Image (cartoon, rainbow over all chains, first blue to last red; front, side):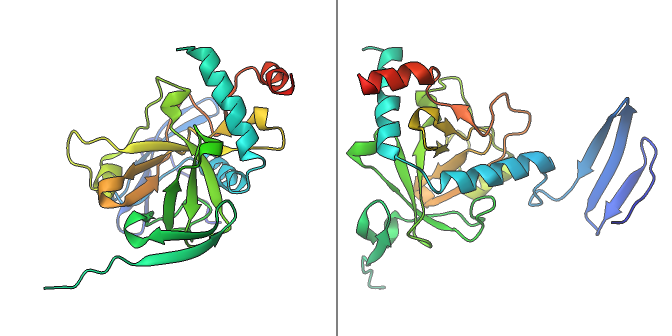
Length: 81
Length: 159
């Protein structure tokens, strides 16, 4: 891994189109600004990992019909109309 | 003039067995789903037995089908935020809204089922296209309970 030291308001350029700016350092939190082309997707790493893991779990459902029954009952209870 | 033939295709699915579908019903996810980037083509299928859930059936890998739900049924205030780029990718005109679906995880205990509201699916059926969008700074998570009181719900079903 390439390691660089930066101060607030200093930045790093990745390739020709992506800039990562250190905006503010407060306690243990670093606020980062990103300039990237619109088609470059930027996510917090843990959110990406979480969604990826959940997608994989969702692909192999257990009894979906049982789940649907429970859900139907819960919804009817919520709005008995 | 081009001759248009409505092609009828077959896949061998887990939930529906051998399934006929028309090419025109396929929704294209150009980027796939996160972690499942190889899945690009899907069908949305309704089945009485799983209503109000629906199925997002993979065409590329017919053994894969995700239960999905309209998140508004359970979370009336839920709104899937989209970037300008997301709207463009779906070909949404100003004022047009996508169909929003959340992937549902059904664990062994179905009462513990959850919906992924952090990475909802947005679809534009008119253009046969969809994508999974990440919600930044959302109050909702990837495992949002669909049945709030699971213990009670289980009682109802066993009575």
